[in-house]
Length: 145
Image (cartoon, rainbow, N blue to C red; front, top):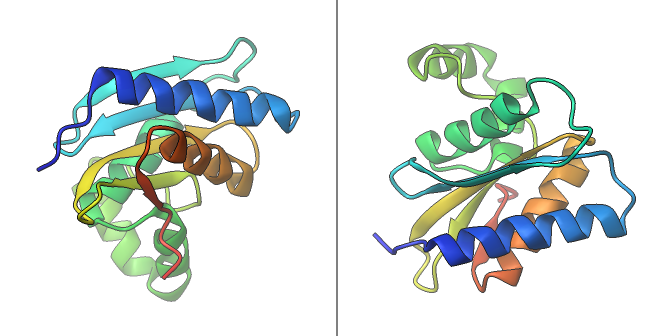
């Protein structure tokens, strides 16, 4: 399993937040987990609404647990709501199937970690995660395919 360093996780957060500010988005919470699901880094901007940290973490947890970016989980929730409900229960409620949970892929395609972002509309949350992952030199997998 490829290692995600603290420096890389902090780069992801900084770049994600820069992307958000450049787009005049609402305040964000950004959560970076390593491939094991351990919290590597977290930041919440001033003015972030209550519980955004938990939502960002649940986007990340769900994507990592199922090995699918949360955009794919969103589609699956529409097509197979019973499966997503069962998976959410199995994860203790920590699965939010909307865009914003993006897998971090290493050069060989292995999962190095995941980013969860919450605070703006889900598509913008996802765009910020992708920008952060790219800035750290990884490939982003939002679950489009």
